[in-house]
Length: 77
Image 1: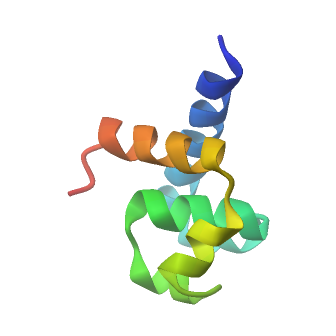
Image 2: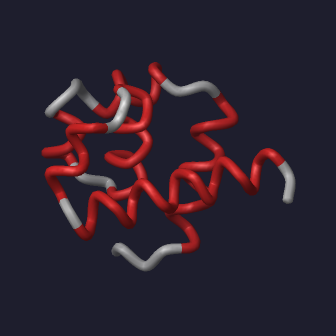
């Protein structure tokens, strides 16, 4: 498994954890919170830390690409 795939799996696991247990969001790092909020496209989660742009600024291009890939694989919309 490539490092990109590993990162996608990590993000997917965090997303599933937060969906199953929303208070679990509080134990994530700021970057992880941003990733989960972006994947879920959840404004309330994003605003718990900052705006969508703040979240995007916080993540590097590898994390943003992984978030996009995870979101495309999931059917949250």
